[in-house]
Length: 479
Image (cartoon, rainbow, N blue to C red; front, side, top):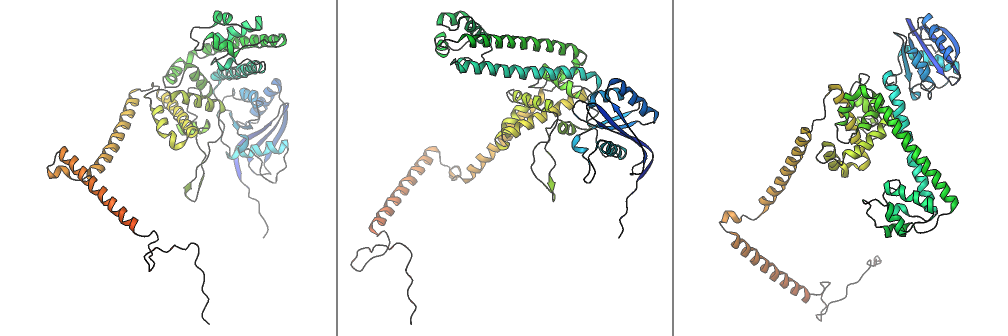
């Protein structure tokens, strides 16, 4: 039988597919036909800003108001920012996993642009969430703030490595080597090269748990001049990191003043601080209309398990990939929420941790946090602490009911002393007599067993025959 090709025509539909690269863009505009024989307009543009405005004008001249591009690194961002300024232009950014070319097609730039235009025409790709324009500047600061904190932690590890290489065990006696006492001791060590008890006592903070003698034993020795110069540079770098972090944080506070209401609502949740609320607002914004439900938001953040169902049976699966900034932040906040006494999240975690495991339980708490944020931002209400009390009372009632069931079952199985009209003294006497009878019976049975042979077989002369071990021998068949 001769094969046929399915032709699908969509008159009046104009779509555009863009294959974005670092230096150029391959654009394909498809007009009114989803087949291979449709009307195509193809051009290549540079990624310079002037060429991007030419691209925008060319799309408007073709009456194309439906665009789809692939999220390739950060190259798509300047194109998106310019095209979204046009009223009525629907710009979509698709995930790379959804835009893979079908098997049997050549992997070329122009072919990719044509494939994107077809996907855009039939609406086969869901658009990725892009935060609104007012929150993008705040998001740049929050992400850079996180990178600075991570770099500061790596720098502290370098300082610790240098100290350990020279035999100084300062981290064994101080919980934070970059705290008040730690910075003073390291600065003094750079100046002198060795520290004594008097030097340590002069710079040690009164809140330190260890004595100057213990600290002197941990950092006893001389540091070479080359190591002292390296430690000095590292301390200066650490001080610079701290000043940059403080400066970035001040700019974040200035940019987030207009969202103070939303930040106050989020920070009312146990485990969420003001900084965490600023991070969340910068990533998801305040208008959550792009997400239909809280489950959609949790799936976007990577806090929901994948759907894995076959034959009507749902199988366990791992959480899917999502926004790494929101996911990591909410898991940190979830650990903080588990330490809040009496909170719903804390009670839920400690009740289910042994059943699910720590990692699954803390991921579930992070998902609950995001669902709380979604509901509270939608309704504009603060966190209700009275629900925590009701949740705790409900748990207490369930525990009391379970305990009463256990006690009731034991009472039904107990001997009916109360029905006989006996008191506690009579009950104790009854238990004592039964104990004596049971002990006498046990002694009699043991004495009888001693008189009998161990194997239970007697010989004619009254002595017990030894029991043969092993498998019995097979007898020969009669002839």
